[in-house]
Every structure is written in C-alpha cells, then in structure tokens.
Length: 242
Image (cartoon, rainbow, N blue to C red):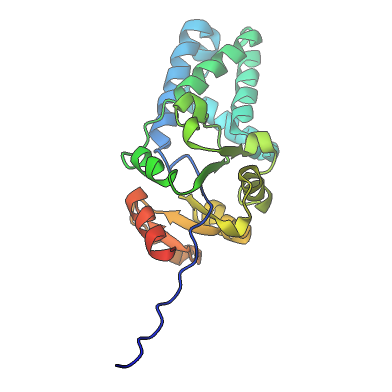
C-alpha cells in the first residue's frame, strides 16, 4: 500500500485575539447621531443660550475647523468635543462650568451601543480558547457597555497617547496580555488602521467585513482573513490553527 502524503501541519492556536470596537463589535454611526441629539436636547434645557446660538450641524462644523487647526485632537475626539463645547459656551455667554455635565450626558449616550447579534455568543466561545483584548482609537467604555468582563486587556488611544496604526498601541495590548505579537490575531473593520496596522506590528490582521465590501482591492491591503461575523471568524480559526 503506497505511503500517504503527510498531512500539512497547522500552526498552534493563537494565544490571544484582539478586537477593534466601533463598527466591529457594534455599529457606531447611529449611536453618535443619537448621542448628539441627546446632547443638544440637554443643552436646550440646561444651556439655552448655546442651543439658541448653535445647531447640531454648526457645532459639528466648528469641531471640524478646530480639528483642522489642532490635529493633535485626532488622538482624543472626546477632548475635541469638550473643547468645542467650551468655545461654544464662551461665545454664547453660558456658564462654562456646565460643560462637564454636558460631556457626562454625551458619553452616557455614546456608550449606549447595541452589539451585533453574533458578538456575545462569539466572545463566549472564543474566551474558552484564547485571551481576549481590545485596541481602540475611540472613547468606548467597555465597563459602561457591560462587556469589560470578557476582555483581559483594553488599550485606548486617548489614554495610551498613541493611535492605530502605530505599532506601539498593538504592542502595548499584547504586553498587557503577556503574549508576543506573533501569538496574537487582531480583528477590525478598518483596512488601514486595523488590518494593515496589526500586520505591520507583527500580528495577523483579520478584516471584519460585515458589508461584503471589495475595498481591500482598492486599498491594496491583503488581510490574513476576511470574515463577515464571529461565526466565520471562529470557522477560520478552526481551519487555520490546530
């Protein structure tokens, strides 16, 4: 009987899987829209001179102009919003002490996210096999959202001081988990910030492509895998790793 060819050996499972948050674990655009409406309603009741002088759109435009003149705010969009509100309160002659109350209102609404249906079951399955981490450029608060207990480490650009795609923020998350970059997989929706950023930091980069986009062809980025949900992510891990 002829000898059978050896079965190709698969690499051992990664020790950690790390995730982007906004638009990977939940949709963020409708949440921000609702948070801005909630904030403006609060302004109308508590800082009426601001609400009379500005609209949601004009406040947004003022933030964009501020960001253009001070690009360092790209690292912390919460700080940008706070600075924009402070300027608006000053221009309207409103009590600037209320700005922090306004930010509390905004952040509460900003963290009122609804994870995609596959996220919680997927996290529960994954955490049986690997360490879980998060790396985000945003201001999502996993504790407020109610998912913090699933993650052994979470690194955000506003607190860390460096943002994706800088390799340093990926390395910081791996260090917090006690794993090497080569032992980790990173999953995110942004081809440049998430996939390419992770790959250049030494992790494998998986594109969470929930919309069946072909944008990777335009961007010239080759993810290690493309998945539409957690079921496909788990299937890929099962096929790719021993």
